[in-house]
Length: 293
Ligand SMILES: [Zn+2]
Image (cartoon, rainbow, N blue to C red; front, side):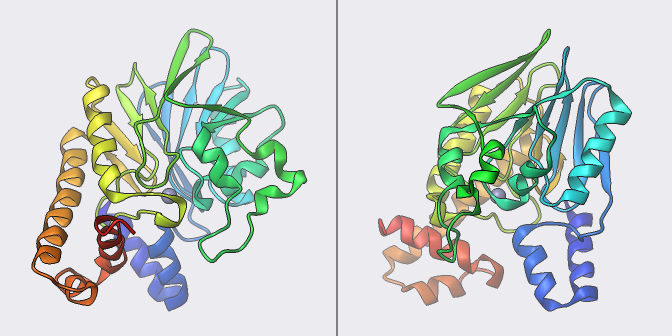
């Protein structure tokens, strides 16, 4: 979302360059940014802002399902307050779209009785060392009940009374455990960080994420969820099928350009120079993927 991208940058200028770098890297809005609830239908809402990635709130027949959990207690409290305003039904499920901190760090502030659900690879990623090699905080037994306790491999349906919510796994991309949460009545899919709009996509190679697979995974998602019309993601506003197709095309164009430069015998530095500076990290990942590293 362009306006939010502008907000992130303005915010960074105000609170310092380090923060700006962090905000750009994580896509997280300002720490004190209020949570905004955007209505998609009478049952489905996007949770924009707070600290952490955008998430979702779904009111089913007998309970509530949340998509991702923000990343600090204040933001989770805001989410819980919004749930209370909309319904007195209990929160039954939290689905983590993937294991990044801005989507899962808030798990630990959810009330008792919430079952955390994720793809089996996402659960495994909870316990992997961080990008800098530091050990995972989720190995702490005190946090055990906030780690996904129900996992699936290909597809799982969660029933909330008379309402069904579909969890789909289409393959590796941003990480190895990215779930697409699909709400059939709303024709709306929550993609986590499988797409980025208005900024360079992040591929977490250190978690096994892969940009070549990201293209296949997103294409399979569009093909399988043929009825899906709306797509919510962690760091942008809701978009339609055309914008997802544009993300796929842009990634493919990077692949074609890198492949052709490699064919011409260019080295990593020369290849990076052929792209905008902010694409450097992604380009290096693409080069490594193409060289089979
Ligand atoms: Zn992410």
